[in-house]
Image 1: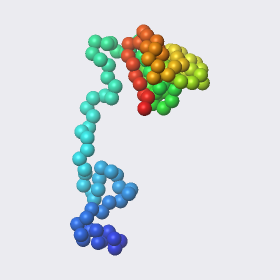
Image 2: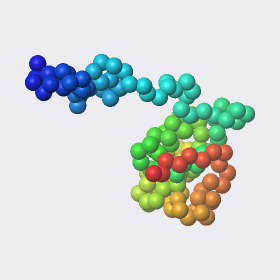
Image 3: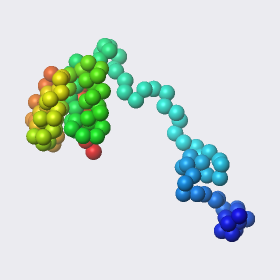
Image 4: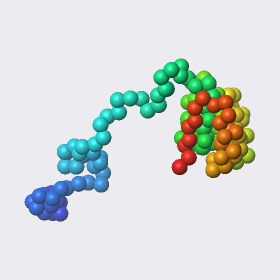
Length: 125
C-alpha cells in the first residue's frame, strides 16, 4: 500500500481518488438529488399534443439548435431569434423555421418575433 494512503487510512481521514466518481468516496454513496420522476419537458394541460408555433431565442447554436430540431420533429413551427445574418440563412433553409435577426435585449424585436407563437423558449445564458 502507498505510504500516504496508509497514513491517511490509519488517521481515519478519507482516501479519495481523482478518478473516483463524485457520488462515491471510499465505496460509500453520498446523498444526491432524488431521481427525476417527470419528463424534462412537459406540455401544459389543455394545450393538446404539441404547440403549433414556438418562439426560440438562441436558436442558432448548441442547446438552442437541438431544441429547434426537436420542435420540428414534433411538428411545430419555429420562430427563431438570432443575432447574425449567417444564422438567419442557416435556419431559414429549414422547413418550418422563420429566422428573425434581432437582439434579445431589444423589447420590440422580441415582441415582434413572438407574435403568433403559442410558447416561448430561451436558451440564452
